[in-house]
Length: 268
Image (cartoon, one colour):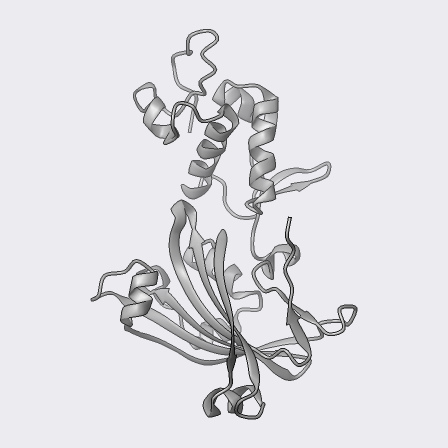
């Protein structure tokens, strides 16, 4: 995205988009939107378009201010919000980078499971992939992922083990066209988190998620996989993850043992 060839009228306060003709529509924001929010939208457009890849540095605030013809303070406020949303990461003395799920502080961002007691170490983590297959999308999954009835999904089933103990059973559905070539072998061979694989090899970045949590009891099949007695209380966590543009790209239904772990969240 380059600066437009025309300069806006003095005092207009409007940032400049890629071309004069697309200036207003490119913002995709109401005219009363604060200027920093408009700049945030433009930066998001560049992230979504792949101008800056996960792990790469974005231009400095000075360069972005010159590009969008706004003050450095306006850019800083936009970048601050994107950093607070874990889309960008500030590194002291190095600059601002596109967040990536491959980074240790980000890779377990959506897994809110902690050991009991809270001071105990989580221990080693092992992922056991039980299945990975393409299939017609079940009606409820298609509705949540905004797919057509005839669309396919990739269904993944896995168990997460902590310190040798099975703790989480996940059933995951992904839109098949976005994840061509995804197999259980490929998942098992990848050493980083699943979202890191989705990001680096399929170009799909999870940027936010919504969750529904309820209490359930283990049926016989689940009990056998999690090595608990049938009827054991479990935490059911349904997560819908979104990429840019609020496009849903993953539905995950997890069953959590809570005898040695608990679900932890921070409210602000």
